[in-house]
Image (tube, rainbow, N blue to C red; front, side):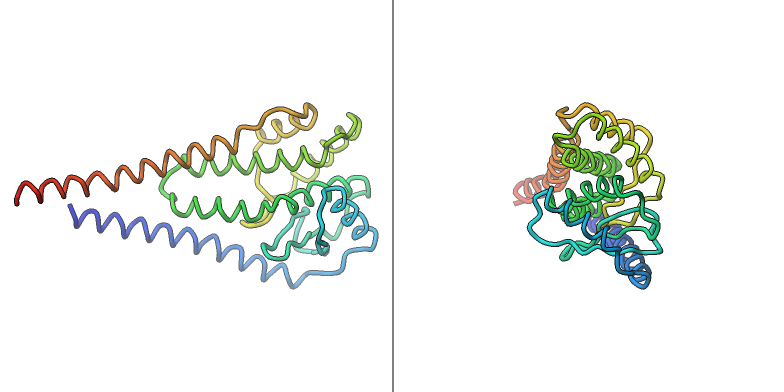
Length: 238
């Protein structure tokens, strides 16, 4: 039994380290490749981003750069978040909506939440429900930023925001620890519905927390049961 437990521990540790290294290496290679193509953003784009930051209640400035290697806007950088925009910028109205959404990510500190979610995936790499719950939490994060961007906006503005969102979602997803999340068709539909019907309750994050707690408790129970059995056998032998 001890030999099997040791083998299981080694397999779990190898899987957790392998998953964490794979995700970290992917982000490092991406950031190293993208950094070479940075260029200053136009003055009007910087002005729009500062307006969006002020609208979202950000007290610090978020640097804005253009990059030829990305196809859609995203925020990257844990310690110093930076907004990266593609070289071909959208119209100013659409750019303002994009900046409102991305600045909401910065105000909420969503990249740190993503780091926590990735740590949970690394620890529970063997559990498909955890990976599913992480995707649900990502969806909840995006919907919260949509709600923050569209708060107190008229219906016509929300319709334009939905159109801009569809244009942005045509671009491929970014790597881990960026705000360029990959979404499916059902998730896009849910986001559009949330934008046009504000104030609906979001349950993704609650589901993730409940699921993560359940998985943690199950792991603790599995780990503690052999130990109590072993202790009982030792007392019987004595």
